[in-house]
Image 1 (cartoon, rainbow, N blue to C red):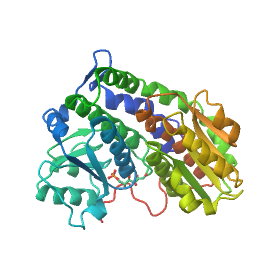
Image 2 (cartoon, rainbow, N blue to C red):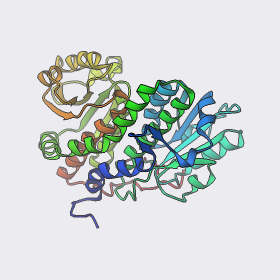
Image 3 (cartoon, protein in one colour):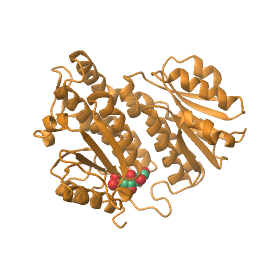
Length: 366
Ligand code: F6R
């Protein structure tokens, strides 16, 4: 049932070209420049008028929400907040008429996320869901939503569910932006073409699995890791750190790269591995300076770089290339090497990657 893979997690990482394609299927037609989200048929025009969107989620799904924040702000110019469901539900959150509260949940059963939605509903918000499990509690209580169609995720560490969540959020953001007129026709068409090309590009990245395994071997000694990125790659840094800590039990932290000098830089020495997401985008030059700061303190740097990169490659200890794509779609690619890195490090440390200690696949108690 693991399809020849050693673990479900590895199988699910390798399934991503297919799971992302399944998520796009019947929804994005790049040739005809059409996005159709059946589940939100009556909601896209309302979303286009929304003053505020609040994402509620936990863990990896919360990271997908952070990517969603950048997407909706950038494309649809809507105010977005991303809330830990457990915090949101125990505050007295301000909900105004017309606010959308969108739950993101693989299982659709996470107790805190479900309770946050119920609270939002009682305060008059329009509640939507982005779930993977069809017929789950969250998908049943929401007014409407979009399924991620990633297929069953068995490994406790979420991988293909995350990329499907980001794919769904991207589709909703593009459709909303188009309805609202905040992106021009050319951008709209280009984004759809780029989105349709993502599965093939993920396939390309998976070809570097052996190379990533070799790099991983050199880092099994580490007891700490820092992950840094900016913009849309900041949530990816958080996700990389979460993957590593949950399956390898190595302490890891993710930060926006510029925050480093406000504290974490004190941790950098020759024993501290630092993973940078340093793809060619609007913050590239800034990230390059952040890498210099780490190298000046002898940190060991692994960088995720764009195909054809020269500058970062010369500075770092190890570089892993990902294909180029539009800046807003980068998380779908940059997260893949981080999933593989954490997987191989955990396996080499003899961990039970599919069922890490203390963790459950679905957290149905708060
Ligand atoms: C991390 C992970 C968890 C879940 C979180 C939310 O790999 O799997 O952090 O993302 O428990 O679960 P769902 O998405 O089912 O609500």
